[in-house]
Amino acid sequence: MTSQTKVALLFLLATLSVVVFVSFLGQFAFFGSYKRVVVAYNFVGGLEQGSHVRLMGVKVGKVEKVEFRPDYKSEAGEEVKLHIHIKVSEKAWPVIREDSDYFINMAGIIGEKYLEISPGGSASPQVTPGTIVRGTDPPRVDQLISQGYALAGKILSVVEDNESSVTSTIGSISDLVVGLNKVLGTIDKISQNKEYTGLVTQISTLSREMTVLLKDANKGDIKSMLISMRDLLKKLEKIEEKEIRSFLQEEGIKARVSL
Amino acid sequence: MFKVTFASLLIETLQSLFQQGVRVKEVVKYLDHLAFKSLNIIVVCVSFAAAVTILEASFHMKLVLHDDSLVPGFASMLIVRELAVVVMSLLLAAKIGAGIAAEVGQMKISEQIDALKLLGINPFNYLVLPRLVACLIAGVLLSLIANAVCLLTAALVTTWSLDQSMAFFMTAFRRFVLMKDLGFSLIKGALFCGIIPLVSCYYGMTCEPGAGGVGRATTKSVVSSSICIIVLDFILTLVFSSFY
Image (cartoon, rainbow over all chains, first blue to last red; front, side, top):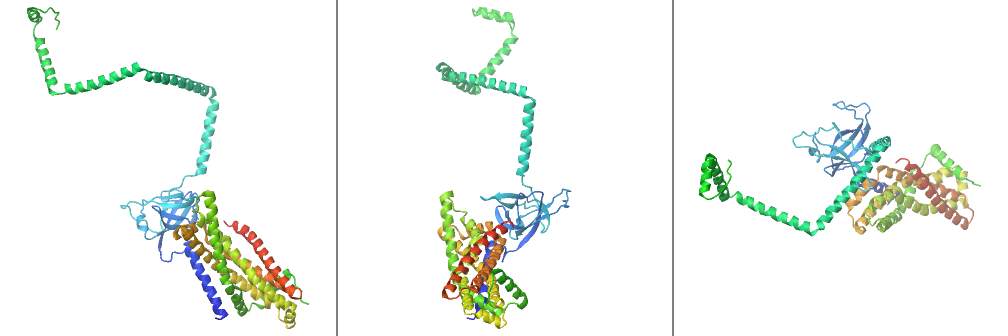
């Protein structure tokens, strides 16, 4: 083998190594085809070029470019200054609809950022490749912390301005807690007393019997009896006082009748 | 009598590149001698180095974290950024550095370099430049091959020893390693390999007379090349870190 052949072989091996490396990195999709869309944000929370794009949790593409657009305004008139150019596998493309949402999430132990697309409704039309869609900005932790800090400052100033009333309120709460403790102690003692326990048992039994009685009352016999009694009382209303008295005297009953 | 310093060697060599150009045939010959014939040693050594890296990283992570799921990611990053290119360069320094120093040293003590000058041939263009160009090209090519071999070995060891799938290794690799890591690795490879002929030719050209002189020049060239590679690696790592 001549030197030239060996050197050519060396170059061939190096080229193969490049192919191995690039395919390991996934920079080229030798047999894949993609469609592209631009997602607009005002804050991306660390999403970078090369970050993964997932659809329903499945990797379907990558972030190709992060572009600053200081003058861009959406159709609604909102200023959205960050454009994320993403590519999505053609296989996954039909699932992305105009009502799809574009979130920025974090995954893994090292907190890798990725763009998550939620599938849209099948009634909604498909997204046209190359269009600009609005993404959902992730929450800004620094902003939350600063707002929390401001809130804490306000609470502190309110407490300092109303120190006497806050102190008296705390004193009242303390008294209330002491009173509650006493009540709870009394309830505890009552629950341990046998007489009270017996009383509670009896009330419970009475309640059960009353329930049975009421059930019976709704049955036909007692109901008809009550109806008869009501009819009787109505008839009695019509009889005069003297007649009743004479009737009762005849029966040997002395009574005061007042209807 | 032919005398040279390291600075003059460097300047004269670069001057001769622009004045006389490089002889491509010689470069191809040296690529064969320096790179192709070192390929087997490099492939074997970097493979084992990668395997040991995976096993050691797994051992330590299991010991400390009781979990070695991050080994493929960390190991592949270490392989691409450091291991493959440094091991390859040190091997080349030992193999070809010694050879170049001995060859040039022998020419020096047998006054062949003086003869070249008498014949009107620039010894830097004739002896140093083809080796330098060949080593720069070899550095890039061998870095690529060493990286690929290392990664394939690491993937295989991960599958067999760590009981993790090849897909898991690929996912971890993509998460940790960037394309620019490979670019920086190739730059390192070229520069490390470029140092070897310069240092070796310098020690060869300043060789003392006798067999002992050649032996000392050979030893010095290997030691100095290795130290230069390690120090340059530190400097380049610092510089490249600022690009992340």
